Length: 190
Picture (cartoon, rainbow, N blue to C red):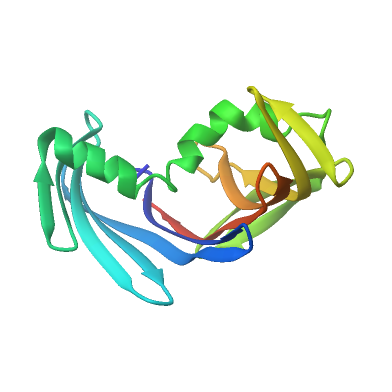
């Protein structure tokens, strides 16, 4: 991802069983060190704190050379593991493809159309998906969720084959009461 997008910022807000447990801005800024090698500055900001770190990534073989975050340094397999944890939410973009058929299943959801949206300096068409009716129970992968709100927006930025989640609002009252919003704020290509 860092070789295609030099900057991405998104926000995450969420409550779990009525308690706010997430209200954060997460971003990365990548700069080229040499051919295929990037320094990636990662920042997590919330109302109570800001933490940042630096990862050196080799996009030639998709490896992580090193990570320094909040005073801790890692290399080798530990760096890769820590980087994967840091990038978990950015990873939604990669793992989304595996769940696209569930998140857009016509049994439960339908498209309301597409429009071009702008995220920082990058514009591209985005398709909006909503629930066919609410509330509804969705059974998938052995898990049942009673959904009370659902909006998904996805699109493919220019120069990429990755179908990006640009907005996701999901609320459920069973098996737990949760309300989650993921929103792409900005992205820069190159």
